[in-house]
Image (cartoon, rainbow, N blue to C red; front, top):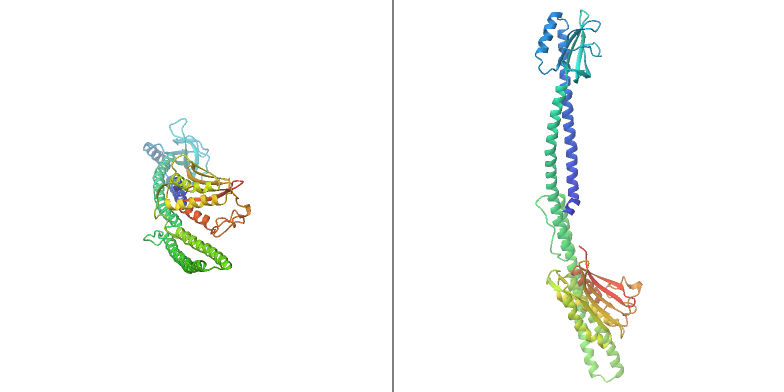
Length: 449
């Protein structure tokens, strides 16, 4: 869920909600102000029209019209009064003439006392127009109704804004979740492909959106990569097989010649040739094994295996060899350490590490094996007090065929650590080297997810 909220799809959805909210609020505000201005403009026009029509009516007729107007004004929103030329009140419901021009135009007055009330103040619109007899006629209308209507509209708009926001959030969350699911499936598929399931391909929907186009192009690229890898592996396998057959024939012929020859010098040369052929055949076999590990499906025989049990078996196997070199060998394992993997491959990887430790440790040295869990991750650690690795060579020891300057005197193909690293990677482990001063520490540690 945390990754979902951190995803770009959610950010796009939130941006969509934000833009929708701003746009809707702007529209609502425009509607609100437009309604208020329209209502006020309509009141102004009515007042100006009534004033223009009534300005020439006789005073008594005007008084009667005012009385009818004010009597029917149950909401008390109308103002009507007549003043003389000196602004003295004659009749109506407004005691004093507001400070507005007497020009027949409507003017806004922010504070006007409500008729029949001592302290109630409200905004209003007034029109003052001078009659032919010199008196001043005043008509007005309260804006409280307009303001109340505006507040009703405002509440209605706000009430409609909340569901709109929820709807926008729901729509954004739906599309964000949908997009996030597609990206999660694509990500998981890519991870599985990186782990070795090269037969998998990215899912492609029925649409033609950019994600489908990218997935289709990536699948085509994967097909081409797999084709090239198969060709490369085929070339390597063919070379290895082609070398192994003539090497085996030459090896057999030299052995027969060695058995039938009595020439000491010839026997020495043949023995040296056999030694070199054995090295070449060992390298060919190691290359074939490395290719088998790296290019085979990574989930072929995976099941729950116990690293502690594997290391215990290898400890018993190698302990006599260590004793023959007076090497003290120890095993630290307190409980089962289970992982999902191939037991035979893990046995081969750990065997390479233990065999190297014994091989490069001089007599009366020590080799220790530990199988533990650190921070929840499985760890297999092989420590020795041997010749170690020079600092300048430590970043090269996992390269194929690389032999350290101090390790050239020891038989080997230079592929043991490469095979161990490939097997470790197959099991989501990382093969590391650290200095033991003296000696070396090789450990396979589970990668953090």
